[in-house]
Image (cartoon, rainbow, N blue to C red; front, side, top):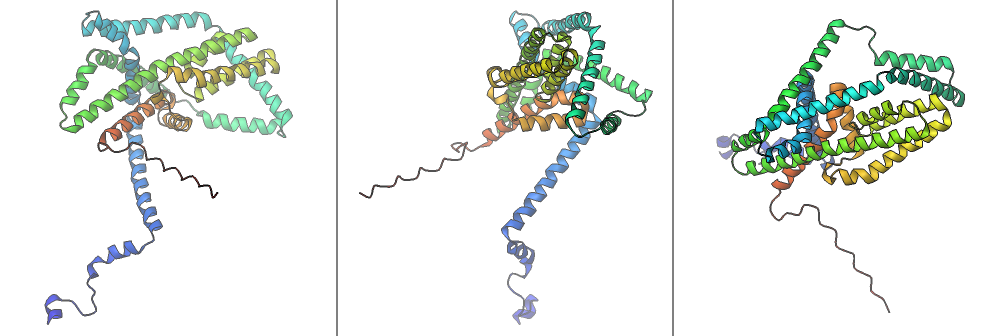
Length: 385
């Protein structure tokens, strides 16, 4: 009678409806962990892929916004100093932008007068240096000239497009000019109304999220400011140090090489490596292997002093990233947005890491330890005597 009313047969167990749950619980814990972690990785990878696709669709806008934030953090102390002189916000922002444009224009004119005729010589010296390097490779390694020429031709074909599309070139130029103009306009408004915009955004939040967002914003802004000013100072120190070394060694084209070193300083690790390689190739073509080796030693010495002594003093500890993170960020930025992406990838990674770390710390329960407790010391063995 009970079986007829409930619709169950005597063979049915009490947990018949929990079959999938029992099956999942019956799996080994290693398999369950692998399934859960694989699903999480698939979701995270899909999110990153969609984000990368969106950024690729609006690459000029993304680079313009990133460059604007970088310049705003760099020029914010100047704007604040002008505001302390009782200047209106509009006038302070305008004077700050004029100072930036005047500095860039003056430096550009100076560089043009000093290096306009030297960059063609730099190209010739680089070709000669590559030729000397090729001779050294073919003499030291079991590689023939034909094999090396074939490899270089393949690399050149992979790096350059066989045909130049005039329409695509014009579009690229228009995108670059439009991004530069947009960055200047955004820079003016962020210098003028940046804090008001941030406070307006915070007022739209309620509850504990407002404090979390406010602290994360402060941490991210301090990180970006420290990174921008520290990177510019370190790049200038590298350029001056390597330029003086090239002058003392008698390497020609020292000023253009110092300029390349300064620009390469804004792309950590990779930029310094490329700039040092260019200097060594020019020294090899101009003065031979001995001067090239001395130039290599000077470049390594300057970069080691900068990385181990100056960078910890100039850069704050929270701004520094592991070299693996820097390489991955620069590579990803280059693949997504080319040279512009390589310049803005590292500051974006540094700010994102500091913001995420700040949010995690604030969401921690009060009194919870930030680090796992250290294991208790093992008891000392007692003397048997």
